[in-house]
Each structure stands twice: as C-alpha cells, then as structure tokens.
Length: 81
Image 1 (cartoon, rainbow, N blue to C red):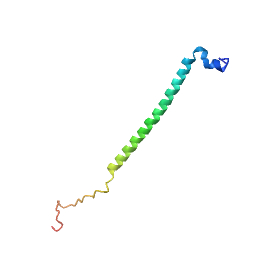
Image 2: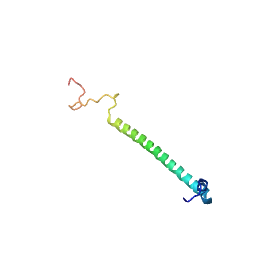
Image 3: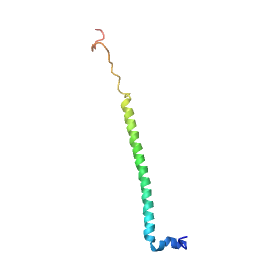
C-alpha cells in the first residue's frame, strides 16, 4: 500500500489541499452537469408538449364556430329563386 495509515492517505504527502480541493471541484461540477442536463430535459419536454398541443389545436375545428355553408349554384342566397 502506498500509505502507512488513513491519516497519511488524507494528508496526501503534504499535498492534501490541492488533491482534495480538485476532487471536490470535480464532483461538484459533475453534480452541476447532471442537474443542468435534467433541467434542460424538462424544459425541452415542456416546450415539445406545448408545440404538440398548439399543432393539434390548429388542426381541430373550434366548437364555437359554425361550419360555413358552401352551397353550389353561383352564390344565390335566395332559396326560392
């Protein structure tokens, strides 16, 4: 084993502040990267859901609007003629 005791391992031969701070920064950045990826994924899914709802709404007729009567016959509006 490279170290005689656990205390020697933690001391890292006098380089402990540099070694452990680099490990801490690395783990912190990994956690931040994972959290950021999760946030971006949620944001993307929310955007896609909105886009799908918007596209579906564009292709569905609105219930409050009555369909237009497109009668053939030259646009004569008098039913008696």
